[in-house]
Length: 397
Ligand SMILES: Nc1nc2c(ncn2[C@@H]2O[C@H](COP(=O)(O)OP(=O)(O)OP(=O)(O)O)[C@@H](O)[C@H]2O)c(=O)[nH]1
Image 1: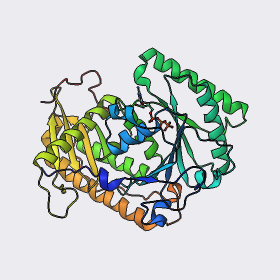
Image 2: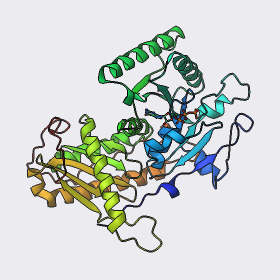
Image 3: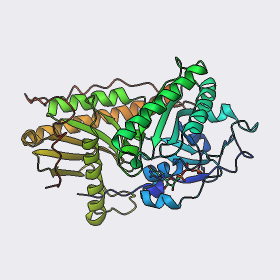
């Protein structure tokens, strides 16, 4: 097995975007070698009140900071741009806004901020009084919608690790209700769609929520989903995720529902593979990451389930969950995987061909790729998102 290398340092950096609001509406920023390339990437804005957890989210998901270390993060006092380049699919900028931002400041250039924005993530601290946060949410989304109606609005009901299961649900229901009432009062309830996610940096929920945000910016998603469906059907796979290895965001999965435990198992597998690879993997000279197309890993669980990881390209890995019995057909699965990988390659090529330099995410068309080369034996995968909902093993064999 070759090794994965954490690309964090090479992949992302804190571009100090200058002081707010004096240098607002940035075309370039320090550390930006090629502002033209960077600026056409879809942008994700992180907004919310002070200390709601915006910087922590960004650091934990994209910079591998441990959740405990976020206790020592200083308050952000200027907009911080972060260029995420983990893979050909996952390419965007995150703008972390200071909590104390004043939207009535005349220097605020709404057109520049919201114009090229793909998603606005509004973070609400669920452990705090959220009335003020809801007022801000309404102000920001209505303003953003007027400038750019294509923005996806995502509300992270954050720090829910401090709440019990019932309180979580109650909190979500209350925030949802109040936010919708506010939108209705401002006359936008029919036009603006808000998605709500319960999140915490202390578990996988923040990665799952960010996966969903990022997926909405990938216009090739239907093609990827389709390929995963075909792969599953022909290889008797129960569930498969296409992971961005560095961030553990899944950029696509098949169309069966995602259950959190399966996702967590796959994330853990990636951690195991990365850790083992960095200890035992052989790194070629001049190579940033020492893995190749042969990289793979297999973990048998004690409930008759197999986790199978295969390298798709430098940044993406396919992680599948399937029954041990069905893994007897490993040759077939491997062959189908190669077809799948070729098809993904075609998606990449089409995307690169179609990409125009001034586009945001919504302007890139979805290519039509089918996985017609995949071989299917008479294998019948059981339906649903995995059969191990109540049967998750407590140890890895
Ligand atoms: N319990 C808990 N605490 C969190 C979570 N996320 C962040 N925090 C804590 O919240 C505090 C504030 O986090 P920051 O990331 O600095 O908040 P911010 O929104 O960037 O704050 P400003 O920069 O002032 O706008 C830190 O002490 C974090 O450790 C979470 O999921 N659960």
